Image (cartoon, rainbow, N blue to C red; front, side):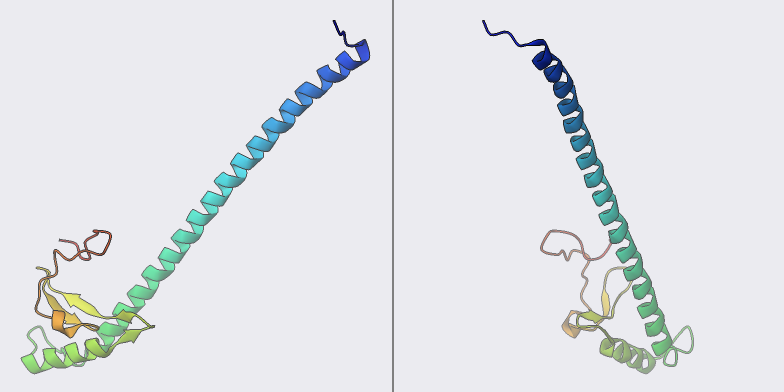
Length: 136
């Protein structure tokens, strides 16, 4: 039977707990770094979404300002409405940004990229992942 000398036993008794503490600390630091990274990604995502919401609000404000001269009262004429729609159809925001307007029933009144969709009800239209493009 191989017996360890007293010096070896003491060294072993000191090293084993130190190794266990080191491994535990490494695991804890790794967990905290992952949690901090996830929180940072979420913070950046939320910041980007806030910026996109603000940009969208500005685009809507620009559109309202652009059509105000054509819609001067609560009952605009057909010519005034068509002129306002024409302005909205021509508006572009970046490479793929455009105006579209639905009425309360989901009928497309203006669609800047696909005018052939105007007059159609798009309540049931979904994206490739199955999400509805408009709220019913």
